[in-house]
Amino acid sequence: MQYRCPQCQSPKIMPVAQAGQATPRPVVPKSLVLLVPALFILLLLVIISIAMWIFGDGAGSTLQTATVIVFIITLIAGFMFYKDLPDFKISMQAFMQTQKKWKCRECNHEWEI
Ligand SMILES: [Zn+2]
Image (cartoon, rainbow, N blue to C red; front, side, top):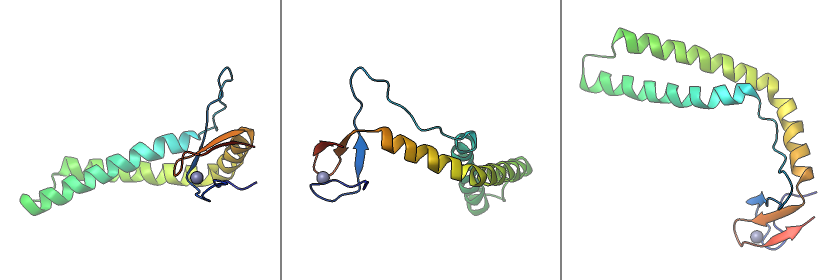
């Protein structure tokens, strides 16, 4: 099974929710739920730190501590997600296979498997 649009061969396809049927969702690992916001917060803290280095007398010690803590959380979450990845892949594949109706985001073509 190929996950491409049969009309324009675009990989930008999405499943269409079927009426009267609960859409099964892939099991998202908790590590990913933790990793994504942790990455965002880390990025934000790093940007603030850099801005403070450029425009002020350097990042405050509270900010530096917070950055280090968030960095460690991100590392742990990243490692946990790395371990969860095989299960997540299987879950995603199972999810893709249960989807019968698909829609292409490029050309709006809809088809059923
Ligand atoms: Zn298409």
